[in-house]
Length: 298
Ligand SMILES: NC(=O)c1ccc[n+]([C@@H]2O[C@H](COP(=O)([O-])OP(=O)(O)OC[C@H]3O[C@@H](n4cnc5c(N)ncnc54)[C@H](O)[C@@H]3O)[C@@H](O)[C@H]2O)c1
Image (cartoon, rainbow, N blue to C red; front, side, top):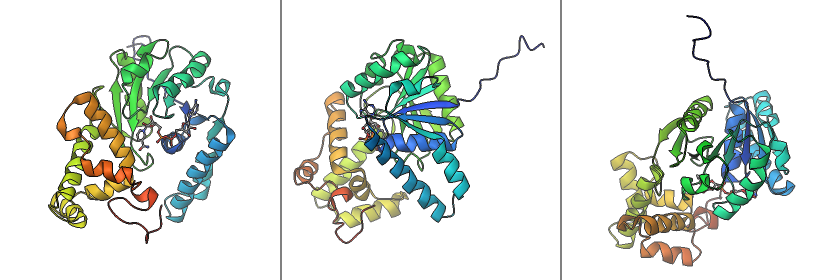
């Protein structure tokens, strides 16, 4: 066999662009940098970039304190992440990961400025949770290079990534994301482009059932969580989890899925709407199902 007929080995991706440096974008940037990529992160302004870097510094510092990371390694990761406020700085990127606000108009606006500076073949991965990946793919020239790449929060700790081919995705786009997931140490599952993809399809009705059981007085909130933890072996009960996700975030996610799927398990339980109306969003507001007044927020 000559080298002419040997299958060319695919080189790992070295330069990644992340669009948006919020909760997800900062985690994604850190994970890509830790895997050896040079990462450029696009934000709307320097202040937002600073907030993203602060979030990463906090995470890296905690990892050092816990003895999980050396100072030198932490510096390497930090130095591989470059802030950008001009789309021109993303030229030469081999992969784009979009993590801006969950709003089709915002995603459209960022693609309008980024697409012209990267090649038409550069794969664009969207981290959307609830929008149609096919709808997002339609926003860019050559939709065949777009697919969903759905990380979980906190990205540094959660090992799953869902790969969601759009109706228009080329098989090579999906293959590229599969290889990249492996490169950054994540385990990938391919799911259909349907509301909730896979994990949220299961999670949303599960939390709704727990909220309804709580509202019906089947057991106390503490007992519902304790029962699920001890009876099913889950690390955290559904009500504490909902408080951590944010009851407002859960409300919008399950309401959107219900509107699209028209299946009752996704319908927001009345108690959820009442808690959200009362501003009881969970840990972030100090009160949700539980009262966190005594606990420091983290
Ligand atoms: N938070 C989660 O748990 C979670 C989990 C999985 C997926 N997602 C998805 O990830 C995406 C981002 O979510 P998030 O929670 O990180 O949001 P976020 O609000 O924390 O961050 C979004 C960031 O995008 C930036 N942005 C907005 N417009 C921009 C533009 N034109 N150019 C560059 N940056 C811009 C904002 O300044 C902000 O910093 C959404 O699509 C969301 O649905 C979120």
